[in-house]
Length: 460
Image: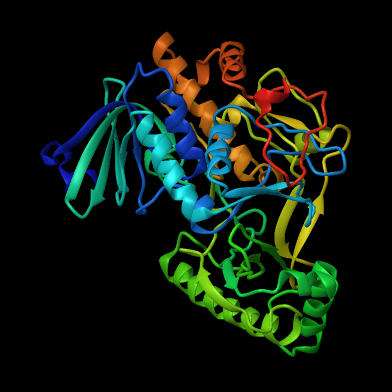
């Protein structure tokens, strides 16, 4: 492919110290962290027309800031707090109770969040490019990476001293030859989900008739008696910031590979089909939904896992369930293993397993460094983890923490002129703590009442 491009003739779009590929929650935080000292140039490239990835394309709730249970602790801080602060300041978020087992969620208006990401990225001085896709990588001899991109203006190249792959599908790492595991090859890949939103819901009537417990029973009945062609017995709906509107995680599409375009096309079609079957079910069977209608589908079907890079360290289920925080950890996670998969009966359901002890474990730095990496980090759902561990450590608060860590690690690598795998983790941890990252189990219970948002800095 390199010969085809003859990259020396391709126009230079930019030379940058840090290139972040993918502006999802991980990539945005990586760019913000790398730009925080205003010392090095940072470029952020995104293939869609807006930032946020899953946070704006599919979902409306940040999970992972708080541990589940009756004694929640806030375990993510620093730059991710600034994102929530912006949403709080405009009245576009609220704390949603631990309804479905993953802990208190930060519900937000995803359309406002698109603007928040723009604002923070631009204010940080990041060179921010949308509608641009990575198509090839060429490693240079002078410790530079040449990335070939395509957009409506044509082919362009970016020469970078350091690269953070936050593409979700590990596109940069795959093109660079780093080893990875393809979800579904060893263990079944988690299912894909088309989320949808409905308006004109009478939430008061819904709650008075039994709320989520009632809805679950009706969904199970519809599935078992085939009154509606639902893919599963369970599913969730929750209120949004917009009055009278709800958002769902109910559709399940499994057995298809999101990296094969024909299969991804089938998944998109099936996801839409299921969404409108759910609309019919809600209107027919669930009190409060009689006059509701779908007002929006996710921009694309939600993909939970594809490539997972093999890193200098690989997070395992045993490490998650150990509840330990090693000295090499650079972020905390308290999310349960939440595995959307086919059950023993062949039906799509969700498997849960909670973290024992304090309910918190630490994620080592090596999970963000591809094996043998000199110039590259990986952040987000393509980080180095086994299937089960990934099913826990994939919440957006954790992916934001990964991005924050990768961004600061890239700065430290540039400052000390060292390879990604050789970054001084103790120094990195000190830098993270100075910016508000939480690396030890907090000794206070977080206030997760709906009345507001408590920035961790106010609780120190």
